[in-house]
Image (tube, rainbow over all chains, first blue to last red; front, side, top):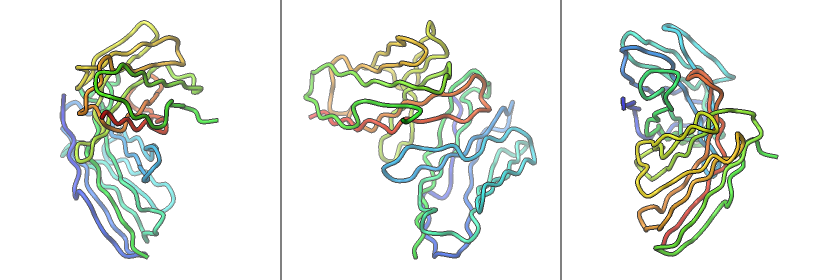
Length: 114
Length: 113
């Protein structure tokens, strides 16, 4: 089973700051890369599924980029708000195939201070 | 109603007891999964099923079993619960293929004393 690494583990930012964090994954035989947002006491919710090198996806103030050749994805949050406080998970199919379950990183825990 | 429903939401059980966690979905997805979350370890896969007749072990299947009773139902059993199975358990579903996002249930918090 391949591994996915996320950094940093946790992050504290002030309201209004922009921030970003990283997901690193094996670049060989890339299939797809997922981002999830997980608020405390709730369940993880899918943000983006990215499949193409150079892909950029956006949802409101949150965006993500993908570099499959070097094996990383960045998640950006512009103008962080307290409601953005959550753990952000990335994941990819464990053997880089559409027929294997997702392997999740340990997440980046974001706290936005008002 | 939630797309993926887990029951119970919380459960405290004694060491050695058998316990079943249930998951049902209205998404019409073929694929269902059980993950476990422990602090500092992230989500780890216990079992998964790609259709009613398909059951596969995940990373940490020892001490667990599953049953896929129908397309919409996937149950996780702990035959003889032990304290290190205390965790937050999530059921998830997805469409076929790795480029569709998962839909998670609300989780079951299990404590084994």
